[in-house]
Length: 216
Image 1 (tube, rainbow, N blue to C red):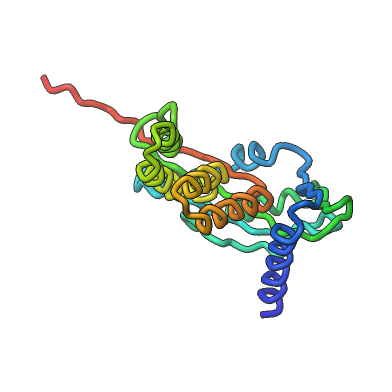
Image 2 (image 1 turned 135 degrees about the vertical axis):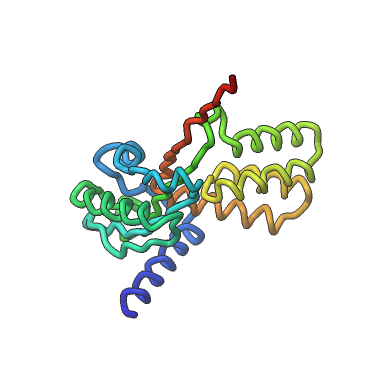
């Protein structure tokens, strides 16, 4: 119970830094290496996930303390228990390789998220993901001043990738064009919060080999 309350308080501190100190100099905690590659090279997709088309997001929250130590690790969301277990193990192996977050040159405690997006395809992955195609369609609708249609496309993109800050920025723009200032501001703040809180979005993909049987 105490750990849960403490974690909630840290998240509240996150929010105060993000909303109340937008002009402050914020420097994310830094990992000694490429955190995306570190996770992507170590996540192994079990064959049963591919066979059964099990996909989705696994989200791990963790605090990087002002001393660069990791604590308060929580699984916020998981597409499958095996992915979550691997993510926790990989995160644990990063201990001792972090530099703390800084606000106005002062180290602080801050809670981050690592998102692992597991996608399963029936064949080789396409050159462009479905969400990117939807984003490009939204951009074309904006150019044509078809804002309602643009909103529908970007909503679909956000449903596919709910942690992509660029999509929230675009939706904020569309809401502004639709004269919906409250919705526009909400998305602007969400994009700002995600830019600071999300340490990495790791995309891993698996696919089935499609074979055709020739009938004589």
